[in-house]
Length: 94
Image (cartoon, rainbow, N blue to C red; front, top):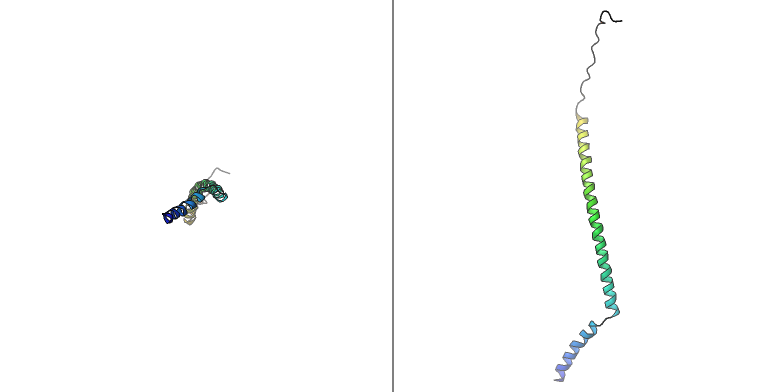
Protein backbone atom coordinates (compact mmCIF):
# COMPACT_ATOMS: atom_id res chain seq x y z
CA UNK A 1 0.00 0.00 0.00
CA UNK A 2 2.86 2.38 0.77
CA UNK A 3 4.32 1.87 -2.70
CA UNK A 4 1.01 2.73 -4.32
CA UNK A 5 0.64 5.90 -2.22
CA UNK A 6 4.18 6.92 -3.10
CA UNK A 7 3.46 6.52 -6.82
CA UNK A 8 0.28 8.58 -6.53
CA UNK A 9 1.97 11.31 -4.51
CA UNK A 10 4.88 11.51 -6.95
CA UNK A 11 2.44 11.78 -9.84
CA UNK A 12 0.22 14.44 -8.25
CA UNK A 13 2.81 16.71 -6.62
CA UNK A 14 4.41 17.87 -9.90
CA UNK A 15 0.94 18.70 -11.26
CA UNK A 16 0.19 20.83 -8.22
CA UNK A 17 3.52 22.60 -8.46
CA UNK A 18 3.09 23.14 -12.20
CA UNK A 19 -0.36 24.71 -11.74
CA UNK A 20 0.79 27.40 -9.35
CA UNK A 21 1.33 30.91 -10.60
CA UNK A 22 4.98 31.41 -11.33
CA UNK A 23 7.10 34.09 -12.90
CA UNK A 24 7.72 31.92 -15.93
CA UNK A 25 4.02 31.33 -16.47
CA UNK A 26 3.26 35.04 -16.10
CA UNK A 27 6.09 35.92 -18.48
CA UNK A 28 4.82 33.36 -20.99
CA UNK A 29 1.31 34.85 -20.81
CA UNK A 30 2.66 38.35 -21.39
CA UNK A 31 4.72 37.14 -24.34
CA UNK A 32 1.71 35.32 -25.80
CA UNK A 33 -0.42 38.43 -25.45
CA UNK A 34 2.28 40.54 -27.08
CA UNK A 35 2.66 38.04 -29.90
CA UNK A 36 -1.11 38.08 -30.48
CA UNK A 37 -1.11 41.88 -30.72
CA UNK A 38 1.84 41.75 -33.10
CA UNK A 39 0.04 39.17 -35.23
CA UNK A 40 -3.08 41.35 -35.37
CA UNK A 41 -1.00 44.36 -36.39
CA UNK A 42 0.73 42.35 -39.11
CA UNK A 43 -2.62 41.09 -40.42
CA UNK A 44 -3.86 44.68 -40.72
CA UNK A 45 -0.69 45.73 -42.52
CA UNK A 46 -0.98 42.72 -44.81
CA UNK A 47 -4.56 43.64 -45.73
CA UNK A 48 -3.51 47.23 -46.46
CA UNK A 49 -0.60 46.07 -48.60
CA UNK A 50 -2.79 43.63 -50.54
CA UNK A 51 -5.20 46.47 -51.30
CA UNK A 52 -2.33 48.68 -52.48
CA UNK A 53 -0.97 45.87 -54.68
CA UNK A 54 -4.40 45.54 -56.29
CA UNK A 55 -4.45 49.27 -57.03
CA UNK A 56 -0.96 49.15 -58.52
CA UNK A 57 -1.82 46.13 -60.68
CA UNK A 58 -4.84 48.00 -62.06
CA UNK A 59 -2.69 51.05 -62.77
CA UNK A 60 -0.04 48.88 -64.45
CA UNK A 61 -2.66 47.25 -66.68
CA UNK A 62 -3.86 50.69 -67.83
CA UNK A 63 -0.31 51.87 -68.55
CA UNK A 64 0.50 48.69 -70.49
CA UNK A 65 -2.67 49.07 -72.53
CA UNK A 66 -1.81 52.69 -73.32
CA UNK A 67 1.75 51.68 -74.25
CA UNK A 68 0.50 48.96 -76.59
CA UNK A 69 -1.91 51.39 -78.23
CA UNK A 70 0.83 53.96 -78.78
CA UNK A 71 3.18 51.28 -80.06
CA UNK A 72 0.59 50.11 -82.58
CA UNK A 73 0.04 53.69 -83.74
CA UNK A 74 3.79 54.22 -84.14
CA UNK A 75 4.15 51.07 -86.25
CA UNK A 76 1.54 52.18 -88.78
CA UNK A 77 3.03 53.67 -91.94
CA UNK A 78 2.53 57.42 -92.15
CA UNK A 79 -0.32 58.57 -94.30
CA UNK A 80 0.81 60.38 -97.44
CA UNK A 81 0.41 64.13 -97.26
CA UNK A 82 -1.54 65.52 -100.16
CA UNK A 83 -0.05 68.78 -101.30
CA UNK A 84 -2.24 71.14 -103.25
CA UNK A 85 -1.40 71.06 -106.91
CA UNK A 86 0.31 74.10 -108.25
CA UNK A 87 -2.03 75.43 -110.83
CA UNK A 88 -2.34 78.39 -113.05
CA UNK A 89 -3.50 81.62 -111.59
CA UNK A 90 -7.06 82.39 -112.24
CA UNK A 91 -7.71 85.31 -114.42
CA UNK A 92 -9.04 88.26 -112.54
CA UNK A 93 -7.15 87.61 -109.32
CA UNK A 94 -4.15 89.62 -108.50
